Length: 332
Image (tube, rainbow, N blue to C red):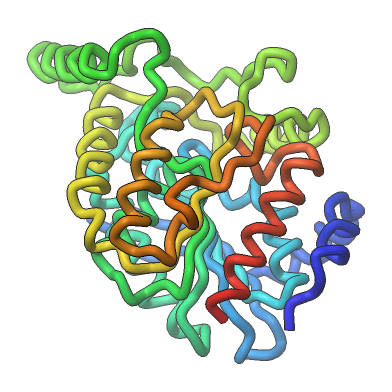
């Protein structure tokens, strides 16, 4: 049986030696994704092969290397843990000559890579269907995957999912039109994928200016990680990536009736990266179709948290972990 929440709380700041020792036992490998792109992943197996499995689906620009503490936490809750590096980021194959550019040919490629990972790796090394925890862009990828493979996942938690973009003061229709116009011009005058307006090569924000986490330690840990592992650095997004993501977001809502996996949506109360209203709309519509998902038709909000809930200060992170574990226990 899973350990108690109190044990989880005591493990929030494990010594670096414990995490490092844990990480050394992992399997780090890769497989051929769509169009033979090299897709990297990490796997951590329990001695008991009948243990439950957890699939972690990271967000944009992330690598599985960033998820060491979270993998450690769930491994100590008795899960086999599997983490994927999406195409075009992390240790996986890049798709354009400037490896800093956030680009994907088609958002469906992310989904198809994830399906291959589940079918050909996780299910061959697990006695039962995996649980799923996804963040941001990973939430959008995972949702599209679960729509296409509604029986593949036992239960899912999507944290700060990228179901819509936060366009700030710019109306959504104008923002989307701007993406279309810049992409059209790009295609007309150049074969090189352009960054979208205001985007550029990897340049991390100072902690005082960041909108990802309130945790000085965790923020600095992943800044140091990316500084020391230049291969996983990724800059801003291209117009093509934005256009592909907008198509995927529309599909998520138009095919919401295909989503049958029990799902909990964790919303960061102070998220300025993705659109909270899109998350609210999603939960309302999904709950009406599948009452077991999005309890009461609303996201589970972590008040005060920035976008990266699982890299936040303990107050917010513990809340998210407790809700995630409780959700999974309901469907064991």
